[in-house]
Length: 292
Ligand SMILES: [Zn+2]
Image (tube, rainbow, N blue to C red):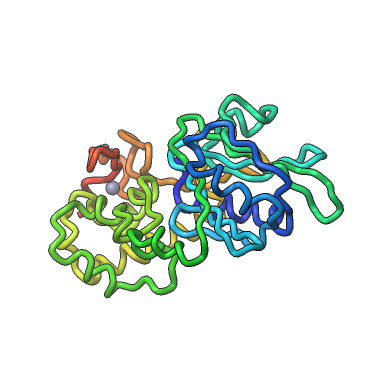
C-alpha cells in the first residue's frame, strides 16, 4: 500500500510532466473509480494542471478553473504518465503495469493530455482492486474533505505539545496511535515499526504512558524517517520493480526491522531476534531487548 513517502514521490515525479498540460479528453473505464464523473466531466475537459499538491496520502491536482482533482491510491492504485516517445513517470503500487503496454486490464481512468505545442500524452490511473478513487472538489469544499485528518507527519506545525495532548487518555498501543490518521497523517505500517525501533520504544506501550522525552524521541525519528524515505523515492517492496526509472523508490534498503521476523537485531546483536506481533490487525516488528 503506498504510504506518504510513496505518494509524495509520486507527486514529485508527476509535477514536472503534468504542469501546464491541458486535458483534452477523459475515458472512465470503471465507474466506481470516479463517482459523479458525468456531472464533473465538463469542469475537467479543457483545463490545465497548474499545481500538483499532496495532503496526507491524497494527491491534489489543481486545475486552471480552481477545481481540485483529488486522487487516493488506497491499496493498489498507481498513476503512470506516458508521452509520445514512450517516456514514463509516476508511481504508486508497484505491479507489472509499471512496465506493460497501457491501458492494461487494471486501467480505470485515462486522461488524454496535450502540451502547448499540441503534442499528446496520457495519464493512466490503474487500480487492481478498485478501492482507490478520484473526486473533483471546488476550493471551498477542500477543508471539508480533509476535516478528519490530523497534521501531516512532515508538517512544520507538528510539535511535541500537539502529540502529548492527543495522547492524553489514549489507552491504545503507541504503534496504533501514531498510525491513527486523526492524530497524524502519513505514518503507515512500515514507517511506524521503523520509527519505534529507532526511538527504542516498544510498540506495545500504551500511548498515554510515554514520557515527554520518549515522545520527543519518537517524533524526531518519525520526521527523520519520513524525510529520508521521501528523498529515497519511498519504499518499493516488490523486487521485480525496484529500479524502474521514474517510478521506483529505494528506502527498502534502509529498513532495519520491518519484515525482518527472526532476523538478528541490528542493534543488540546475536542472541536477540526481531519479533513480530499483530497490533490492530497489522504486523509490527520489534526487539524486546532494545525497545522498552
Ligand atoms: Zn535489539
